[in-house]
Image (cartoon, rainbow over all chains, first blue to last red; front, side, top):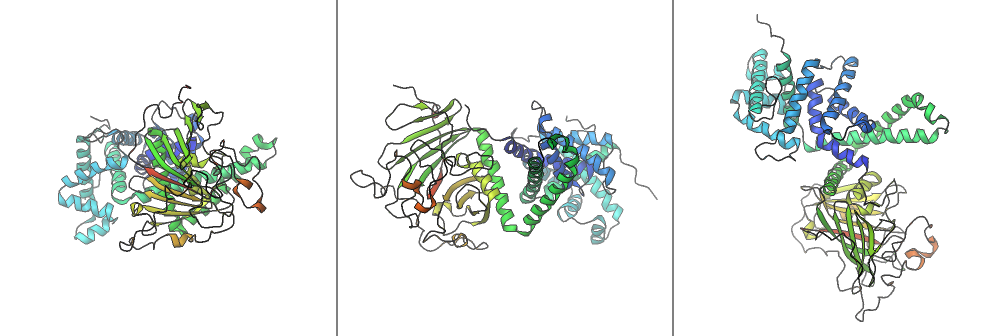
Length: 189
Length: 385
């Protein structure tokens, strides 16, 4: 006789919570933000139904993201507004997300949550020139469109767009230096 | 005019991942993430319940062949249930927030289970008296003890004030108990408690804190507020949840929880059973909670702690108090229930060999004691002398 075991469902919930944020980042990167919540929910349903197929010797996160990728492809066939990445890009996205998932900062803390890993972005945002940082904050924190920002700053929308691209490139370089991001070929240095 | 060049897969992947990380970092909160998990788990439950219902309804011969044909129906039912559940969550923010707090705490408690960390709860059980409608008084019989947990092992030491303690243990090597003044013996059941509280799948919820939280989440209507003057001083500032039973699930009529939302742990739980409606002097659920938006009051006298006095139960000569059964005497007359309600069916409750009556107590209190660390052999069955 053994002591009381947690049920498969309880363990599944813990696994989803542990891997949910990386899953959401992957879905948004693969398929955009518009359908991300629907794909997330379907991924959880499919993962539960196919739990018997999961190889316990391998990490759960990539398996979950693999399901989400297949579902995103199915969604893209049905929903015109879904901007699914092409297959080569999908592979690179997974490498970046996996690199971010392994990132342990300076503390080498293996149990670091995805949310704690995201704090690496704060360092990188702090290093951005103020013009770039302002644009990032306006787009993401204040959820303004590029055209709204252009009007507010009295600038061309294309200028704002390029500034945002440049800001992302600088953030990517910063994260790569921290080994929280893959390098140009998506591989962690 | 220069056209924007088509991004390479490398640039596209980088931008997409950064876009996703920035959205996550700058726009999402712990609450919105938790709400996403809740929606997914509700959808999962709805799909599972719908599938079970269909399975149960179909004749045996059709259960396999009809699966494919029924899948569309099941999905539509699941979608309907899911829609209803999500609508409920959206329309009742108080309840959904309580649900989120419970879910996060449940995860924390499940993790503690997996990490095999040492945890101790002080236990107090108020047995049913002959007149269970009376408010708690000095003649009531309290059993007291500790409930120790390390990973999936647990140990319950319980006894009446002034009497020897009975120990029941569920260890990885099997269950055992050490009755009063006897050698330890193995048990054929690993249940520490009678079946006062039961999960839908038949497990006993009180044996695991995460299972108790799951029960509250699924089968109770919960309201919450920051603990104020209605709570013990040391619990103020914790999240105070008061939950009332919904439907005919086997469990207490009311469960009060105090949760440390920083660490996602239950600091104290009080479970109350009442056979004849609200007890005299027992405040309603809403009266027990402070105003939702107000800070806990800082002035006024501290409330009565609520824990039974340690020297109150036994009489001076050590004999049982009025109406009190001896600790190892088994269930009280009528199983502690009013005579007209009759004893519970035989398969309702399992005996815990006299340590606890098979019918529910009036109240069960669990208070977390920390920090704590047990010796290595705390859950190991002692060798007979």
